Length: 401
Ligand SMILES: Cc1cc2nc3c(=O)[nH]c(=O)nc-3n(C[C@H](O)[C@H](O)[C@H](O)COP(=O)(O)OP(=O)(O)OC[C@H]3O[C@@H](n4cnc5c(N)ncnc54)[C@H](O)[C@@H]3O)c2cc1C
Image 1: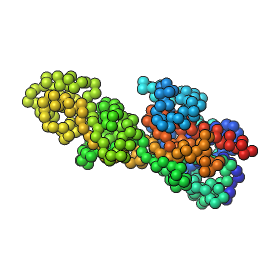
Image 2: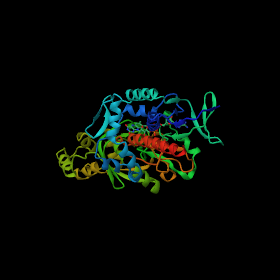
Image 3: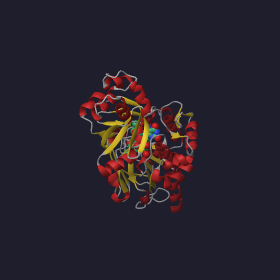
Image 4: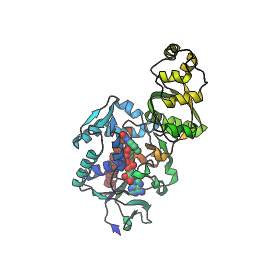
């Protein structure tokens, strides 16, 4: 079966929906395809932790979060800026607030009301939806191929936006399978970003302490430091400060196979202050007793006991509390990462995000080769590239007319 010509947006995540919104509001016939039975499942999952839409910091600082990709993402984010994203959410009836860290959230602290209002508006603009449609490349005539419960469907689109996401949390729909349909030379391998890291600690440690949070620790390694809550999982350590350092740490581990980091369990105290407090405790008290009196958690005490000299003298203990060593062995699985690095190379695209080797096919969102820390930078770039790809489609169709 061949459907009449429409613009196909494949992927109903924030990037695809942003592209569909821009196109349908200019009167184009758009159909959004997705392999899942309902749209934007990862966006809804992001809502479980409050939906950090964007960040309020100065735009130059904001743009610097994209590292090397800043040079090509910046014009797109300047066009659809953090303020524009906030206004967009507010126009959909979801007022936002800025948290003490500068992160911007909808007041509802979830994604479902925003998504509901967004989908309703898309439907009034006549954007169509075809769910349970798994994109499986092109046929020999250049028509899009979809696997559906009713069999294979072919679509001859006038233009296509691919917004298929990365490869983390595949049960939410983005499984990275699209890499099979694009030439390998146009892709950087997909890798975990904002991810945890496996350690060389014995399995017994992870079993005993999984779920325990090391509160407000400073972690340092490869010349970078970050502070916050670190969670112990069944095989790794994760949490906001680990995610923040994941890009440089991933590179070091890729090169060297191992990375030594240190944990500072008391970043608010200097070594001298800790030493003075420890000297106030009874001389003959055990190391473990002293650590307990300092309020260190069972997992922190275990690490200090196993990896530092068993020496309860105040100077030694104070030093170890400030710099407990830990070896990381690898980034944790891409399947568990918050986002994906790698993807379609910018060199494979023109200024409108159109694939050079496939005129009329545009790419947006996390499937592009950029990465950023958590903090609202991920969604911001997905929205901005989705809208930019839609502009690319409009310009291209104008040129074809
Ligand atoms: C737990 C978690 C929390 C997060 N929290 C935040 C946050 O607070 N702030 C933030 O900025 N970012 C957050 N993110 C990241 C953010 O959700 C993603 O960066 C964003 O959703 C990516 O948008 P996208 O549209 O590019 O791709 P996706 O949202 O992944 O959407 C891609 C869509 O394509 C569909 N698809 C894939 N392959 C096919 C195929 N072959 N055929 C048809 N359809 C297909 C999928 O089903 C999916 O619906 C979070 C991520 C996770 C996992």
